Image: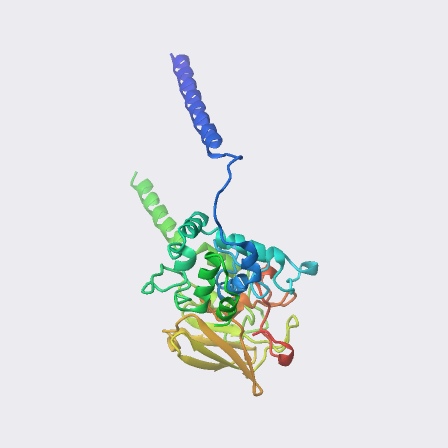
Length: 181
Length: 182
């Protein structure tokens, strides 16, 4: 009497495991599309690096007690903050911010909400509906909760720096001014 | 049966109490290592280590909570002497100002009770022998200066497994004209 019951249990377990395997495999197959391309209209990388947007972000956001930390979603590298690599002999890298770090910062910034930034750029004018521009502002000033509190006003040069870059023509003077405020 | 029930309830309470600790903080404190037997636990202990880690709510020194604390060394060398008598000046986001002097170990600390309404970010600078050394950036949310300015490698108080990529190095005052890094 015991044997048929054990057999039934084994069959039931096998069926369940098989079903689970099918579900997982399907999930894997349908969630990956290696041929997909992203038609996102992201802000320009060269402008980010050459027009001072990156430096502004390094100085105003990239301190070691803010976004200059490994665990931050918006991670910012800089010469005076988090370094991407060690220096010689495992010591701290004391060189200026490297090209690799500047590039990583760019992808960190545009990767925060790539679709939303892209949509805002395509809509040509509505640039204030994503985290990059909402996080730095106070709640009263149209921002959202930011653990570091409000760090910019919409009238600050730094805010103009970000807006100008996103709109396609980064204003270097504003970025430089914003970095020192 | 009563005994089993009692054990289960006791186990439940134990689980709740254990889960109240902060494993991230506990691990960070463990990495600081033990006390230096040559230095009594007090204002001059653990120079260079992040003070507020322990001196804050939930920390093992929460009976002496600090708003801000740190260490100034004479030079950038490992185990450099603490810089005594350096005036550390603060201006917070609400324009409140404070200044404190470093002790013989180079340590300084502002008890939380003396600046309960400290508003981040704040600016800080040093005054040593009439020379001003302002910090280049603001302090945004961390009360331990030594969280970012950790002891340089090779120091007695260097943190175990420290990652030099995330420390700008200890604060020092020597060669200020050549670019000290407070």
